[in-house]
Length: 199
Image (cartoon, rainbow, N blue to C red; front, top):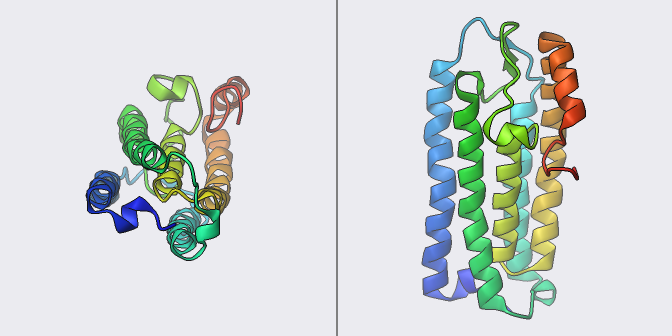
């Protein structure tokens, strides 16, 4: 069974629109964030921006390949509903990510760069998790896997992308602990990374 988003025009259009809602603002934002970065912020990225973007791209490509080539892993029941839920999650994940980015404001950077005068942001989605921008990205990736209606795609896109995100988060948290000290350590004790009360 081929995914509906690859075989039925109405689903294809809805899927493409959802992907554009996710990808286009990311691309536009990447140019703006680079130009608006505070020159006093100390860069401590350790290549994590390349790791996270690379794992994300590989995860999505592998998910597509599996959905097209491994039809035995297709989700056989409620395919239209699963596909629609997946498309909705792509958009919801993008919205959560942008809520997190806008809440972080001037402290948001593409690469890991921290200022010593930076505050520990605990408002908006940061009340619930430490890295809601990545939570939004994971929600979008889950949506892509479900929109492709293939279990192997869901597992692949989440697993591959999560590997890159965990490396990135480790780099970020080390930099934040070094720059912000005990207030960030206390914040870490109170919150989970991606999913409230769980993970």
